[in-house]
Length: 115
Image (cartoon, rainbow, N blue to C red; front, top):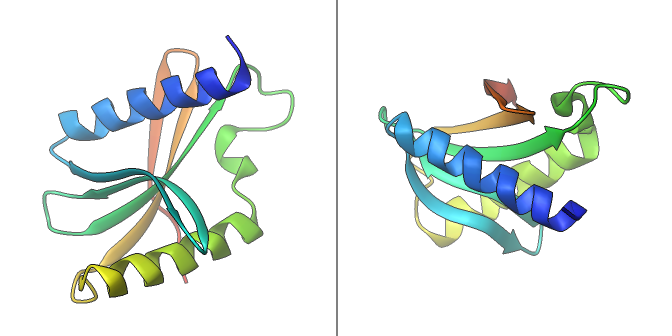
């Protein structure tokens, strides 16, 4: 499986995981001028969640969450600002999560970073 196919598969697993936890998936692969967000969802408690999905086959280069750099976090902030403004959702709380996929394991890190 090539890198793109692995990424798509990981994002699909993450979306199913979130849906199973009661999240409503609003967007997948949302692309705005600020960059791309893997998943945008609304939690059961009405929080707007921007989730970065990171999958790894090996821990040689660190955990999947460690690959979410400061620059990536800034892009997510910009995407969230653009999205909430365009959809008139600024009244909702926003949270940034990371979903790590390592083999068959899924680790959902809620509120992985903030601003």
